[in-house]
Image (cartoon, rainbow, N blue to C red; front, side, top):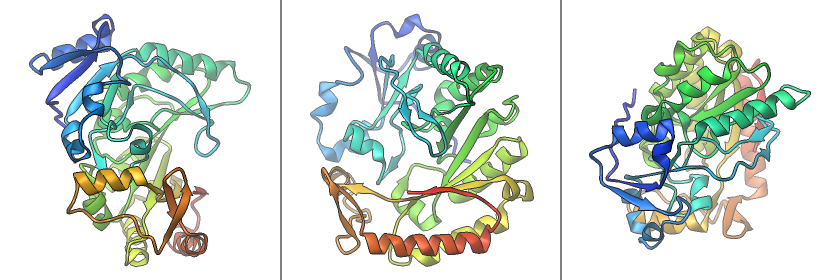
Length: 336
């Protein structure tokens, strides 16, 4: 298990966070950490002016404020809505992370202390709807990781469980699931583990849990009766990718418990990349693998790249074939 004892180099905080319960807790927890007052977590000039080469160092800072916008985005994959929630950004450094496209090098961890306001809106929206809606609360961050700092995921599950309607879901790349195992979630929280072959985790997903720990976490969550999903994401077409991903599925088949194998569903997501990623990764991680492959990729507009149509189609066929070989009875929700 990866134990996250995150002590930031500095805290950038909006005024007024001490007026919230979580704000008080964080200020006490990090009372010895240097602090700077900022006007808005979205616009920290000192950070924006830093060089790309300082990307990893910037991730050592923590930003605390309140979330001002609460716009829900329709999803219709695992959830009905992508919901802004208690954090954005992350302290890990996955070289393909889509948050880098959104925030550029400012994809550091931001914590939002007005959690009561955000969860209350979700509960009200859920109970106004005719159908049973599912809300994705982890699309902008990793809530298992965040929970090691804030206990927000435990707080959320405990405060959502009695809502008459609605479900929550979140993805994670971390194995620190023990705090949520004993909670009475009532089947209303869908946990989804993102996995990749060990070779890719080691070279690309810096600061995340090992594959072994992630598989163990899936088993723990299944035994705790959480609905479980596995994201094979992102699928990266490295030189020996077919061997790596078949070995990954074989590993899952051998190491997942029978309960997990019976109930798990899958999501398959191919990597997209961007000019912003290339610039930051080249300067911040000069010795790391280059994920941009012009022989396999084509432009997607606005400086983004995706795998070429024929290459992508062939890769989808291969992934479907090996999924059917190892998990013939499990549903693939979507491939994107």
